[in-house]
Length: 334
Image (cartoon, rainbow, N blue to C red):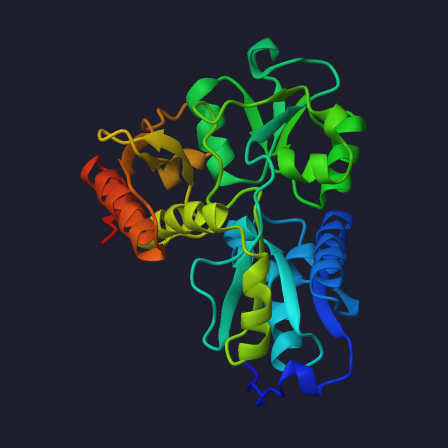
């Protein structure tokens, strides 16, 4: 990792604030969304620094085989460390559970629709797909959840940005694909959604639908200014979800889902319910004759008012998963 230079206070720097972002259409939308917030609410002048990451360049292999989702953020962090950018905007589900030393999340913005979307030109739902239908996804989480409902499907890898994935569907390579509903909605493509999966049937990934703003940890000026943009309920919710993944050694090479929702506590007050599902990593084998292990589920509800509360809830759900038989690489995760 590059050395991190000492920052100057923002007030003493007349230059504009620079956002580092991936160059996909969705990533640019997200960066433009944050730019509008910064200009409207903080009065900043903002420029975008578009970048192509390793995750965008390597499309012939699944992320789990080439280094994980950190490939989408590493180049942006280099731009921050070198002073070429001040902040980076990420889809939070693409952000590793533990950031490199010297970096931190300044805030998490209000969540969009966290659900997965069923997209097809011929079929209205997963249930309508015929035996052996080809479904595209490169998410191991989605793969094991789909297999749990329809083990007869032919689930094949699908990489590329959102527009590329839709094009591959339209060209006839797949009968259906599964995408994040948030990305489709943000790009005005909600009409492509044939069905938004109920979270109870397709638990989302930790942080899905939320945007995070990353900065260098020594930028106290930015941390203070950006704190006002945070949506605290979303931040607490995704902290609980990401804590499950962290406790399980989480990465995109582990089929793990974690999602929170509001729930009533026994005393009548409002809390958070955290649901998680873990799939056997070996169950992603394409051998149709394989007998796949069942998913492991866990759920707990607790009062969550602080980040410590959220982390404790995530840790408790991870412990419940392990007690139910969840393992990583054939060994208990602990």
